[in-house]
Image (cartoon, rainbow, N blue to C red):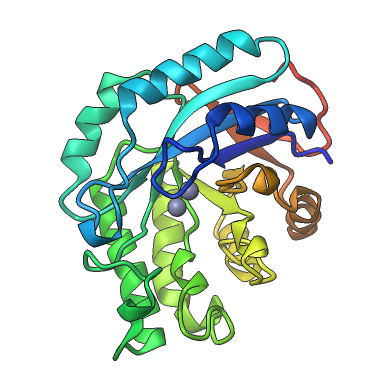
Length: 275
Ligand SMILES: [Zn+2]
Ligand SMILES: [Zn+2]
């Protein structure tokens, strides 16, 4: 395996994980990873009946610093965050970001119109294709308001949860909406995350799917970040060998990691710890 960095990872600082942060670190070391970035959930104004997806930032930051010290020389641990976009949150997120020395920021869309597609009741009375299209439209409009982020997390996240999941989904069916997002990212010099969690959910594809990644390249996009979005130790660097094969097959030559918000390109097959 040559992808030795996992830049999307959660621990018990996120509402939907019970795993102590150190257990994620120890498993990453066992797997031979060189660097990992925790990206705990910060979803302000999440529908409260489903939980409070707001990381306790002071404790989170302290724990990252503690583990960085303990494991120095064995693995590099970076301090990131996954911000759940909603139209009115760009401003509060921007002030949070200024308060901590984050290495990496993922902008993700987990909600649509303030509701959660992860919940089966969300889909009652909704047309799947219309909902996917609305999701992409809201995502683009959120991105246009959020200036302060590094990468767009799991672009087609919503297709994990539709009644037919990704069976009727393809780049072609949503080409116009997806092109608008990809073009915007490229114009803004932002990154696109390739998230391997979709493989774990049985979708047989990462998010975004290969057809979207192919289109990204066609449009001139080469900037990608990579993460498994693991919430448990067994999901760290999930299917990374397969992911690498897929990405090199499409024509990507490497991926990017971030330190203190600065991008560093890592070519595939690079085994150097000095990047
Ligand atoms: Zn997410
Ligand atoms: Zn995540």
